[in-house]
Image (spheres, rainbow, N blue to C red):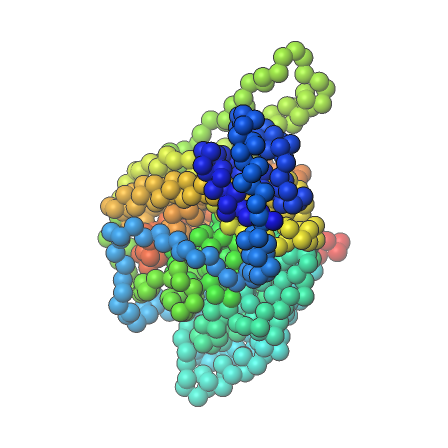
Length: 622
């Protein structure tokens, strides 16, 4: 029996902990129970570490003493809900945020028909949550009627879009009946009272399965309600469905298939908040709750044309949600309009006494905030068309084989197609700047801080591998839907070979990135950026909030999407599909960020367009 802690201590004495070597060697020894010289040679070769023979013998004497501590930890079978004994905090100490709670201030009530609800209640399917809330508040439509309508639509369009894991019909109808009784009795809980919503199926709901979208977890139940679910219950909202996510929060493929984009059902909705975005865009819920670790609200909101809010890290408690990365996971709303996201955030933010990462900052929404007084920056270079990236020159000598030539030609073709799509989509960047100038916004050009953000992504995979360590060690990872080199099973295996020192070094680099972005926001309230620029990785690491909103639709002349969607590029939708724009805010600066985003959304109106699902269904039947 030997102990990894002592093993690493021996490696440290030899100056080896800052390399890949310890993780490689430990994994070899773990499978056979004893370290041999041959294992040391193999591990040293993988890690590119030169080890004289006398070092190997000295290491053997220490490395084979015992394995007891690791085995004891394994026996605990630590559940996913247990967080590490450290807390990530995006605040550096000089930031200011509101601590006094003020009443919610909504924008002027949306214009509604004088008669109230239309004769055909399904005409309400694409109304914003703010509009629906007014109809429910004034009792021009009942919560029961809305709930029945959305449940019917979920059932109708799920076979095509595959966005439902579990309908919560009994719970929903009981909640809707309670909402109508309370409102009739004068007990109005606020603008979400009586509104049907859908939860990404990584949120626990008592009495229903919580599958995490993953094979092997199809029947998992968790005997609690997530904090976000409890808070939306308290706000009077009506949970109608648990919606899909890519397996263990990656992509849009889950154990039941692939969730589809309502604007192009031949294409995936992107992920991992696949169902929340698809169902909201399809007019099948008033709003959804998603989560983001590295693009999981942003990406499906882009594909599906929804308005998604990724709050500041530590604003919304994650208690009762599946953990993927304790230092990067965020929960947030996916809606049809910016003010809808503010209403939902108002209901779900703040400490719950369980998620220790959550600060006591206040979110004071003012729908009438004078956005003209805000300081607005934009990443000037990111809005300009960049030349295509040249591939590296081949290094092999002699003539390439036919197979190699085929791969090079395929790579060249993909680069050309991607550049063609970027050239087409540049019109939306140009139109954004023109619209902002037309609105009278005094744009401040800034540069996106240069830093190796991608090199810190292994922080996420290391934490994810720890969150699902038992899945890897037991071999149950083979039950997951996707098994390519880019999917979780392989990523978890790779992450197990990441040395602790390298994890800490990446966190130190992350601190430097946080300092860069802290300085960037010293004189700015909001920054505007293309959604798919490098800011996406950077701000998920720094914890800054973002709101993503539809920013136009490609015309019939748009380049056709590629034959295969690998999920890496959200800009491949093709004719008729939406593009998006991102607004970034200061830490806990959601109120200002959303006020400005609302002004832009009101000026453009792209959120009012919705897909023609019946035409798509008729075409499929024909």
